[in-house]
Length: 181
Image (cartoon, rainbow, N blue to C red; front, side, top):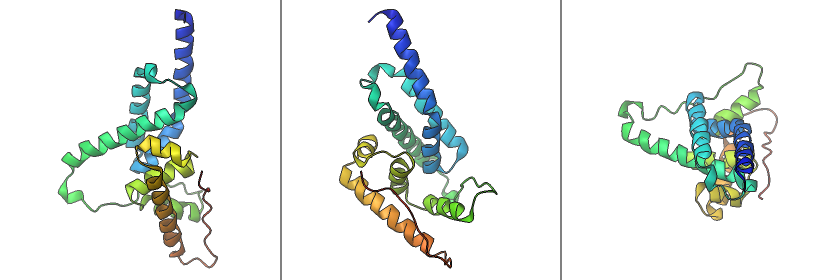
């Protein structure tokens, strides 16, 4: 490969990485419930990805590679936070979803319900439902077996149904989620 081909390939990959920034941010926000942290995680992911472009073997698997890096950044953040967590703030798990006054009430309720899910279920739900990854891809990204992905997504869906049905609306609550892939 000539130096010019190498630079063009590298520039193309960098462009692809930047185009995926919004998806990285959305997943990081779903996991963290914090806009600033989500932005930091997305930025850290892109920085690490650009720094390690040489380790990407298959450009067709760029999404799985990026979300694997994001997962590692998220876990690193949680490890660092664990040692610094203030005991007085434990239990303050208020959902911190961004709300737009023009959003429907149902959308706000679904977002709040997702925010109350345990972290593992929220991670899997975001990658499968929000980003459309297959169970196998999610398992590879998170470093967990497909069976664990399946059980977490099942538990997350059941918990969402229960939370939304508790709202007591006059009409039945329908939660349309994707099928297993």
